[in-house]
Length: 239
Length: 271
Image (cartoon, rainbow over all chains, first blue to last red):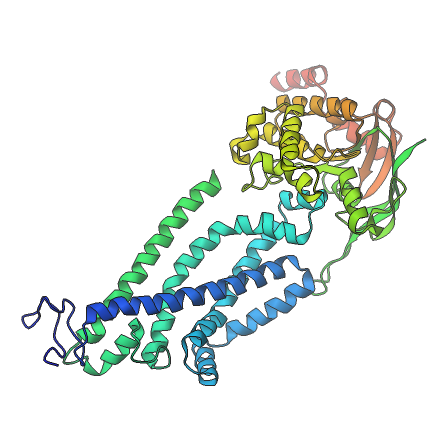
């Protein structure tokens, strides 16, 4: 317990034993950050996959299912867009408890409408392409059109969008954990660590600061990856 | 008289959505038309005259609002399941936009094979052989099967579209402005190809075009469409030599004549 609230190594009181310092309980911030990345990444990726699957499926169905199906799904989408995300998340967690799978499902439920909207728009464009009409003339049904023509042509814009929206989901998890309704202690997650460090901001800013820097770097990294992916894919689409 | 395709009093009306009270559009208005087995019928008219809509009705892609369609005695709009698939094999299509007609994510071989896959014809090896056979038939090297559409020229892409349509061995081919997006020398090659395929495969051809010269070169019979109606039908030479309808006369007169007529005008202008 001697090493409580020890500053990072580049300060006078710091040491190489704890390169990023320790928190108020003497836990090493570097190792906790690494573990926190694992938790946060897990929740964010599963939440993203859940919302993507839901959004893509409903978007494709809305785009191909005819005017009434389309109107029904898009009405639900509009309702979800008007609901404040945070309120929805807090309600869900209040009702279902703050277990990790609840977090994943709730993140999925507040993110899917954006993908559904995007996918539907793309499907409406692809649906009018000559190759879809040719496929129908060959006898291809809607399922075939969706699987063989629509999804492959959606894949590259989707990969870009999903990569670019990953940081947003990560921040959502971090925000919830910061508010204390996300990941519960003692499990480490980046948002949880920032929340824990909130009370020590004046005396030991690094307790909240180190995980914040980690989040900023991850977010930036994904933005850069997404941007370069987009550049590559655009070139191929034009060719 | 062996009528393979019969369109009787067919009308297609596009209704506007309920929230936009625009007038209805009569794309096709009371059209009666027959296609005999092995015939090449040219459907000519300006843009918006309803010729493509009529073609899509025959393909069972657009349902007529009123009227009757018969293909080989059957109403395609009554068909379901296996009967509908059998109809799809009989009637195939080539569209104008050769690039949009091919999925950019599918190789040429996959595109040509799509019909065989849908109808589950043959083993994978037989399908591959069929793709090569079709490529050969439309005058492309079998190696093109591995390539993506964007690496092909417009004329080559249209050959692929023709190969895809003919892979199912259809009786009837609807060619919707198949050469309009191509330049003149390529047009001639594709027309020659269609002409040869017609002879080799005993195709019945509905050739839709706005280009009178192209129709004249390829078709046995012509139907002239104007504002959704067929205003004149008859053997090609007869219609071209002695058009009876006012609109047909106007259409024929609007084709620019080569030099002899233009020469005096040029001289007058430069004087």
